[in-house]
Length: 289
Length: 318
Image 1 (cartoon, rainbow over the protein chains, first blue to last red):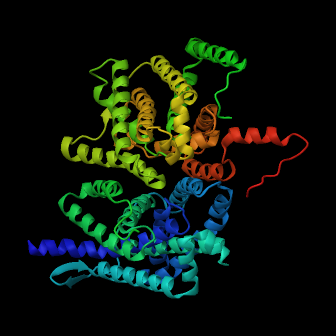
Image 2 (tube, helix red, strand yellow; image 1 turned 60 degrees about the vertical axis):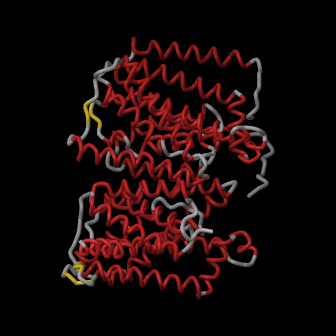
């Protein structure tokens, strides 16, 4: 009994790290750039497929391909914001109009990226095995890749937090998050900073996708469930709060692992129920102001 | 403009509408079956789009729950199609959607902006996943066969729903109720201070729009013969009404109608010509429509009309 509880808790915490960095990216895109990016999961899918391609065809270590996936998804995100969302922001009459329009545009992106991926890689399920030897964590036995990906996720999250807190550009991002108009008046190049945020958000998704592909099988339609997870974690933790995203990520990881132990088919239903209850009871989230 | 206006034109519109209606009602007598089937689909999308616009147009609450209400209608037809007459199960489907929307509206219409949108999107997903779980684990069967009904009958029922939806949309716009809805969209606090029961107005309108979606779902299910949760609660139906309404232009009543007609025809062509690229093209159209047609086809035509006079107006705000 104690052992199953330990199994469930540790599995949840290990998954929580990945949920957290995915949510940090989403939170950055919505909290600062005001784009509710429904296509966030598609960047996760892209990251996963690029990692898969490099591993199975070229033979590059999945952990090394993080260095390729990160800049690649960053550039796509950055360009998308420059080409699409900056224009929308200027042409929308009010911020709330922009939120609606940009969300619909990102739904369009979701279909474009997902179907492009189907054309490139085909619709079937793919996967590879990496670091599958088992490791013992305080009595609970897990595949090594679980532990490694969780450590990488936490490492990336902490590095990103330090970047936002210390770097000059991180300061500009935080200023834009508080009040983008005033930040612009203070000399922050606002369009550039927002595009940067969107790109960084896509990069976090790419990292997440790379890590996910080491543990699970992947397919072009996998993205949306991670978008839902990102939305729930962000609402749970509080919008725009990085520590909140981590707390939310670990909580959701735990909930997911408890529900899938009891009834795997219901885990998505449980997420939705949790999410709806949360929206009704405390839409601001745990760390929200 | 959005004012209540009575002009000599008020005789013209009913006259033309009546003529068009007579033409549509006699169509099955002299057109091939394909036209009837295509028209039924077009009517379905027009009803979905117009009923979406009844609520989301004036209030600016972007609802993505269409698939949920549509799907409830579809499942009503699947469950009751064999035991009840046609009009009865269409009515039950409509009422079931109405009640669901009423309850959901009571719970969620306190939420603002994107939170409302995400919540409504989650609704169809929640129902779909729950039904899938239920069908695979409890009943052990996936999907259902729906009773089959003659094409012409479906067409006439659809035509009646179509007319009722347009009438409802028209009269809601012209009434005090419609003005209340618009003032909620402009400024909700101000509307509340004016003495409008904001919650009641929103919830009732949301439920009315769901009523028509449910009815259309129930009648459309009979054409599909086999349905399962994936078909009935297909998330695409959350977006089609929004997309078609934006494509046509949300400002006027005829905007969503034009958008739905043009788009359905486009979809028909795309699915037959490019079955593999269809979804990709759909995404591109969505992005391009939002980027270049913020006021839809109707807005585009109005802009042409305005820019033809010699002096071009330069927009003041940028």
